[in-house]
Length: 215
Image 1: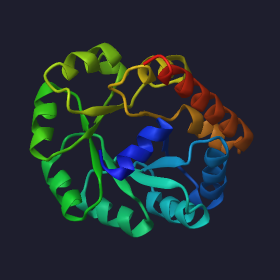
Image 2: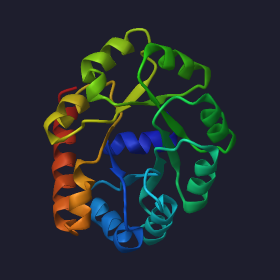
Image 3: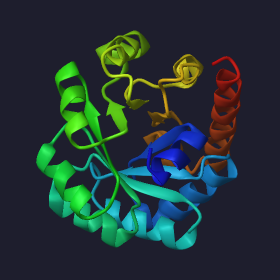
């Protein structure tokens, strides 16, 4: 894996962040995540102002590893890089997008959901793939089945991840990290529940540590 993927794997969970009011919430959220032991964030371009959130967070908390999520165009890759993103995550497997990110020397972790997309990933020398939507596609049993013919990939399942199933996923050596939004959901952010976000991060870190002991 590249050095960014290795850092993601060390932490084990990537909060998927959607901010409606980045000017108000971005810095507080970044500090809350780091305080809880999760100095990583994937800021989704589903929300307007994602690049603003990236810029504010990377400036205020430079030690945080920030990436851009739900990236679907090359223009968004450019905006993400300009705002300080260190990696890109796409919801699906777009070969043009992968080539563009590689030309720009920014790691991209594309979404995959089938053996055909795993197979295509070989062509681009990818090492870390996002399995999405994980729970709806069969979760860990499906990931294990796909690892049969494709053992060279590490996987970042996203979609339906919670405190209830985080440990199950992270106990598998196939999993580099999980993507999740349960610790950064809209209500927590809108209500400014920064201490609760930190607590959920701390609980996640403890679950991951315990799960990895049983690999």
